Length: 478
Figure 1 (cartoon, rainbow, N blue to C red):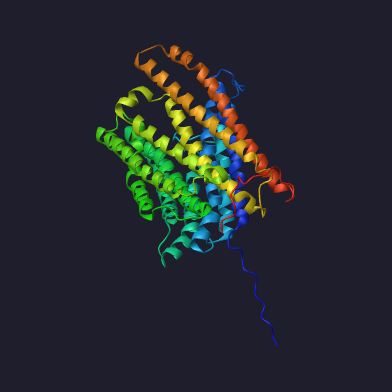
Figure 2 (cartoon, rainbow, N blue to C red; figure 1 turned 180 degrees about the vertical axis):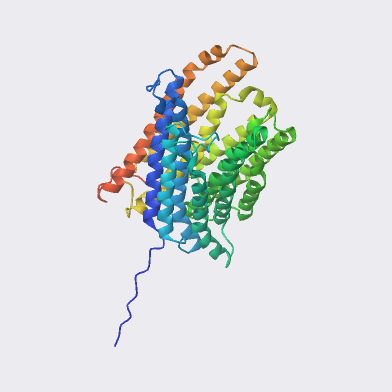
């Protein structure tokens, strides 16, 4: 009599990929925030590496922006996708082997971007500075942009395979809608921003750069972010989203209006005025769509109003949503032609960028990590749940203070320039605000380091060695 032996099934979710992307993401967050602090010291005339070409402030600034966008945000989102997509589709991603290939190739690309930027080989495209490899005679030896395009295509295949298999049999939840278009849009956006400007000179090339800058945020990071919120918020609140119809209204508003906004980076430029006016109208329209998403999530919170107090991931998520709406309202104001006369090229824009990239997407990713980290380690809780309170308030107070300070500095600079005051007067007028900016950045950096310390201790400490009490971390999602 023979006995059938069943082969063990592969895990539904590759925990190793989730964990690895999260770890690398936070490593790059530390590197990029350190770069931001160093750059702010240059504005205070306290830069420690004066005269060292490899560490010149301009190059450090590009490491800061690229490190946040590609090193931190995209990496942690990829880790979260390996957790969320199998749960929503009830299918594994296409291939674990492909997942590890994507992980290592993507790590190489981001590391090459840092090394290439520091050695002075960056491309002249904002958010697209990733350098190509050059031979000694200056010709292109290996096109990194082409490798990025291949990598983005592989990421799309990895996640779209289970999504389309699931969607062909039954309706898809709105998170899968957002994820699907993000994988497709980013391929088109990256190609537009990193190839077309090389062949289209002048204002035409600048138009595509403007579209690329904005669409990279709006057509990749935004749909991934909102898609994650539509998954994690109902799961943690243990109730459905308030309105599926309203969620689709926000989705289609994003799809229709966001691709048209990029030219608002070039108000009063030589780009045709119809394109500038169209960008302003689209910007205001998308902010209206964002308000519908905001209402949808806060209506979902009804009956669970205490959740942001007792559930730390929910607190990160909803604080990030508030920052998102503030950012969008500010954007709708400063794209107006009358406002551009005052705020263009000022610190107002810098405060705006920090609020959206760290205050919204950074907060969401910290919240996602707060929920997932113990679970991918096989732990029941964090090493020190009580530390989450300190991390949250250090980051929130630091960012809100930085935003208020930089917005105020921008108004001061704008009115002085509008009044034709000497350049030196504007520098002296915001000198103390720049010092305040460095202090608030250090506060945020300290909060992130404390969070990472808690991550490390959770990973290496035995289960019984928890420090502190309280239910500030979410219970596992069923």
